[in-house]
Image 1 (cartoon, rainbow, N blue to C red):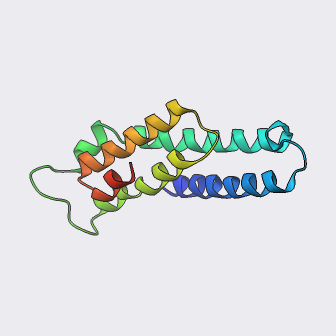
Image 2: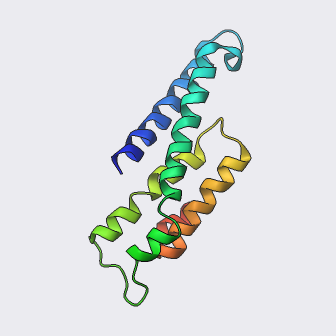
Length: 125
């Protein structure tokens, strides 16, 4: 769980650096070594978030969420599943990822919303 928070922070920081560097560089920033490094760090963080969320689905989430009763607010299960919403959203909104990556992340976010009945996840798709 804490790794996804770290990856999310890395994505946000890398995007800020990217935007700042684009404005400060006199030449095309996308052709620089810094851009290549930022792109690879972002992609690595996105893949990490996706793989950790994918390990939760579909077998583990079914065990975590008892469909016969709603999840209690503040329960461990709710906190665990909810902790994937923000990282998946940030990863799906970052620049320099392919359309396929974006679709996979949004589908995962949709699954979190539908299976765990979290409206926020559905509204962020």
